[in-house]
Length: 309
Image (cartoon, rainbow, N blue to C red):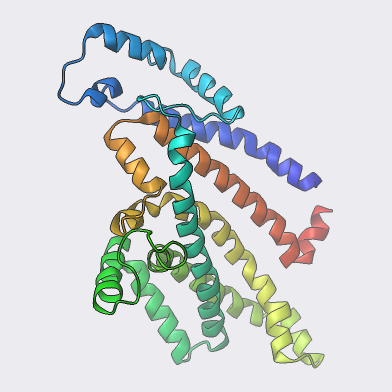
């Protein structure tokens, strides 16, 4: 608990600095968001003045950011320039993106570690070569190419998955987008697992376990694999936030009404409060994920737990 509290305290300046940079970048964009709402229609100067005063657009940046953070502490992410609360706008969309990210994350976890273990145990063999070649191909191909190809082949031609929308709910509508979104991370998880497992199988403690007569399954599963999963856990923890933030392209391809689609629309409409609100939540997810990974280290490697104690 003491270590967890220390990490939470250290996360406070990270959270403040990150959100301030995001806030400053969003509201430093050229253009007037009030005029963007009106489109091509002329807006009287009196209306512009009232709207700018209502949303404090004339205040210094630090004052605007301080007012925003006070609202965040009370659970208020602000409101759009049309008067709708940002939290209310994201309420339904957040669940769509969370389900998509969790599906992709589970795909990375199960398939990625499985392929990495298979390649690591058969180093130099056909399975190892196939995994290395396949993951290299996935990393080299852009996600939108993988998405459209999977949609046409697996969805339209073979009819294995729905091609768009979330009418079938989870898991039907999320399996194919989740595999597309998690394909890039899966390649890295498989490679990390394979490399780390190969190194640990050469370690002295593994040779000692084998010399003591322990079975191969116990040596690999209990000793080598647990230590091999430490760098994999680090990547998976950070990558969950990347999946939440990187769902814009996948949601666009499969027409999923998530926060990625909402952020894209908000950038076009210069709705800064929505963009800042979403990124604030994503920063929180990154911080919590990193804390969870740090605590997981002690479970995977007792030496780390004893060093902290």
